[in-house]
Length: 480
Image (cartoon, rainbow, N blue to C red; front, side, top):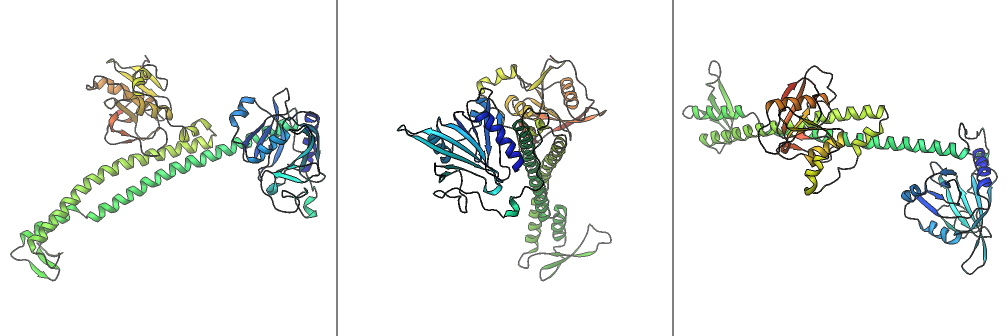
């Protein structure tokens, strides 16, 4: 706030607050507070001495909102309450050429003596602070430690030192009041919008960082698995070496750590070199190659399964990142909250069945075969449906490679889900996804017990240990 704006705010505050009794003080953060001067229109004096944006004006808030937002008071505020409890505000003065307001109070001590205090609101950037002065203008307490003459407890207050050139106003302009009834209302609206924008940016950075971190983690896992696979070598090569050594036991020629054998699998039967340990017999060397073959073969199969699961997760994370970036570009706060939202509310095991009957997180359908089909409404609802409502033998479906609803087919009798019900549920999964305009959509389906939640994953994001895929046309039937 510049000098001209502060002068107008000073006049506005003086016309409303002079002669009022100080009431409750609400600590809103380390550098922000609101003071109740018992105005009848729910207005409160707001003071922020944040170095990046020091400001003061009247705000209109509900009392319960201020009480809910209040933090534990700092020692300075406790001392302020003690000294100024029920004190009257006699005068508000702006120091000449300074971004400093002086609030003069008259109070009565515990023993009935009249006392005078001054609250200094110093809105000077890095040196922004609050000071409580006695009747001789000596500092008796401060909200935070400052340096410099006249800024320390026990000293007579003086504005922070600045070069004379910096004290000049220059080409200052009063903050525009615009369509609002008062400058305070205009300032309050401006800073609320600014705080909302900063909060949105902070959430966006947090969500983006989280998703990118999870994506990089899985990409690193893929790289590690591929490196591990490379270490095991080619299984067929090890088997071939073992077979050739055994086939050449009578005719093989050994030279140090190499053995020359005839390659019966190659054209024109060439002679090739195979490296072995010098101390090994040929049969021992062949046995070692067969062990390498077994390890490489088993590793290839296991790593292939893990790579497939990781690739599915990577695809999902990339789709989530695309959706996040779209939400950020469109300033969609609701979707952004899905990525950093609260965890699903826990419910007891006894209430699960009742919750399923009165579920609010999903659309409910009945298949042609009489099976209940539940379709999640959003990312948070998808998580709740899959991990709180669905049971291990229920059928779970989701559109492949597209963001969309989780679909659950309830299977209380643990029997086989009829093909027609599977088809209908898959059509719902396709329809309630971003692929609904496509002529055909691939849908993954599996039992819920094969659906897992990766640690730290965003809402609605899952991994599948095993699944099948069906190709369907997006379609929505009749809701129950």
